[in-house]
Each structure stands twice: as structure tokens, then as C-alpha cells.
Length: 84
Image (spheres, rainbow, N blue to C red):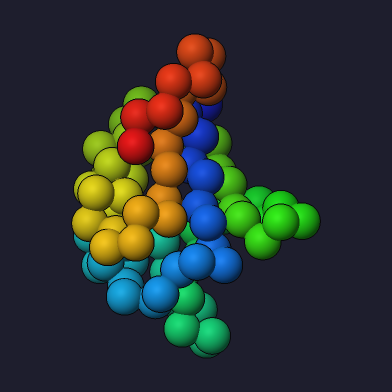
């Protein structure tokens, strides 16, 4: 069961590639120079999101912490607490 939500502000991504480098199982670079969440759902506002479980949290925390423009956000789905 998914306990966490990745919310990714794709419009403000600068395409540095840190997320794809540290968590390639979840992130990939797109032809337009920005990254995408593998299997993520695109929202109308341009953001992407993906529900993940506990075992996927650490890799995505590393991706979020490495992002120089802080466009990757992690949230606890049950409590709505923002992790990053």
C-alpha cells in the first residue's frame, strides 16, 4: 500500500539530472531536458505525482535533497505531513 506521495513541480525543473542519477529506478531524463517520474501521473498544472511505499522513500528523499531548485516534494499520505 502506498504511504507516500511524490509531487514534482516539472515546470520549474532546470534539468540538472541529479534525480535520475541518484534514483534511476524512479526518475528519467526526457527529450526536452527535464526529468520525469517513471510511471508518474501528469496533472493539469504541469506537475507530476506518484504514490510510493516505504521501501521507495529513501531513494526519492535522496533525489529531492539533491535537487538544486527543490522541485521534488514528498508527503506522507495519511498525515499529509510534508517530508521534503
